[in-house]
Image 1 (cartoon, one colour):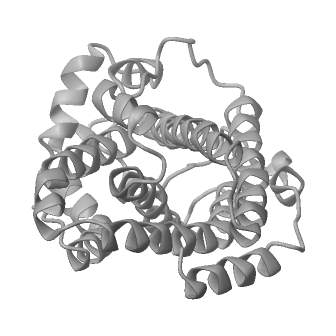
Image 2 (cartoon, helix red, strand yellow; image 1 turned 180 degrees about the vertical axis):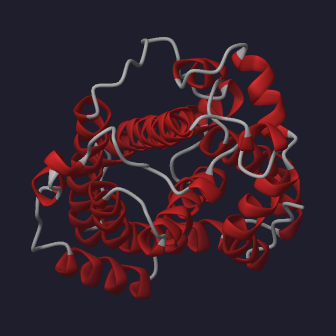
Length: 283
């Protein structure tokens, strides 16, 4: 790391000092199943003719399961990240990095507890095997060298993609107030985490020749696409749990939904521009 990186990490650690448990920051009694947890324009089936035929209670339940899908994606990524970060802490690190990583692990653990509480509070059925991470992205996130550009590019993706969705939800009309609080807590902490991950990525890229960036680009593109898909389109069982039969059919409809594609493209655009600034090509 360079001196500028150390200064950034010290500042981020200072900003993390006034820690508040995310679970305590949410008014959980407001997370009721009588309300939408995501706005309808954010739902994977929104814009399809079939969506307009769905009963209100089915659309509302779908919004709740699609939010649970987002929570599961967050649990998966933070589990992998905390495991990898704890491995980094087992090796000697500059004090600024060591302190900051401890702060980030505390905050990520708090987010995971908040996500678990969100899933449990609604009381909706979620079978243990209903949600699975994408295999290739999961393997790469667990195996990529923790000091390398590939790992930090994956970390930037995993933090920036949900951040842009959370920022959309914070201003959306008609969503559950507890969901808004969850998104707000996550946004505040993730601003620091994204800044740190970008600094780590920039440092790692400085050590690579431009040809190496081109070599890892297909892997970064695959990670980006797999994560965006699992984040924005829930697994087939979630459609069935929402009251729709033949979940695989509904998932295929969602994946081919041009309106939802446009929604996703708008949310992903800032992340794509940022990664293109580092020399990656994701389109």
